[in-house]
Image (tube, rainbow, N blue to C red; front, side):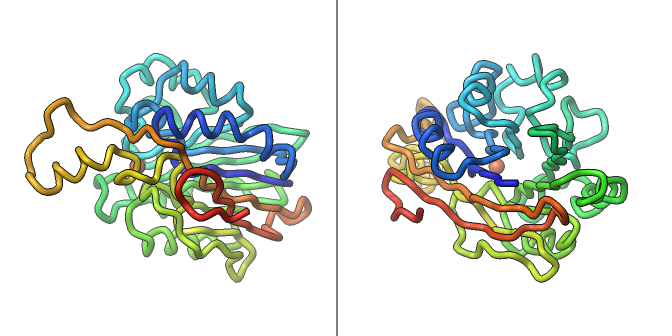
Amino acid sequence: MKILFFGDIFGRSGRDALIKQLPNLKNKYKPDFILANGENASHGKGISHSICKELFSAGVDVITGGNHIFDNSDVFNFIDEEKRLLRPNNYPIDTPGRGYEIFEKNLKKILVINVMGRVFMQPLDDPFESVRKILNEKKIGKDVSAIIIDIHCEATSEKMAIGHEFDGKASLIVGTHTHVPTADGRILTKGTAFISDLGMCGDYDSIIGMDKVKSLERFKKKIPIKGGMNPATGEATLSLVYVEIDDETGLASSIKQVIIGGSLKEIS
Ligand SMILES: [Fe+2]
């Protein structure tokens, strides 16, 4: 099975680039399943129903979330019904939406889990226990063909800890949230593909996606900025991984980082 997983889509610039480039990427990589983190897709904060539909019709199969998933209140109108949009699984029990789901594509079952870290983040439930409970029930190569985990958090150490904890039990574990791609994509010792952070699909001539002038002013003045913050509007870079998974074992056979467009140096 071939997978594409895009890092955090940031605002219109990120959405437009993804929609424009996806046909080329599909042509090149022939993915069976496409995922993207979309918690910043709506003006940098949250996601709306119309944006979800736009990304699904472009070919994205599943959208994962994180700490900003509920920032656009439109999400409350559809997240309970829309199985293809996930929020972190370790939110309190009655939180709208779901943190994991099994999808069927090309006669294969793919379990996708979204979970959030706690280092420099909101104090949610234990992410290790949250994932463990699901994986106690579902095994790769037996119950499902692939298991994909998005660990949304700030600290690379916590993401690597999740990677090693579930090495051999998941096909692919990606970190999201920092909007800065790491260069440590690899296959862990027991066969799980891992990268600490996918990076962002957005304009990198910015401060993690936001207009650099206003963001810099906020850092320097420490007071709210007049008119609020706005996403940068320049050409976006797409940051993603392409992963091949062995259909028998559900473990990864390769992981390749892909960075295209905008102001980052390309890797393809
Ligand atoms: Fe985030």
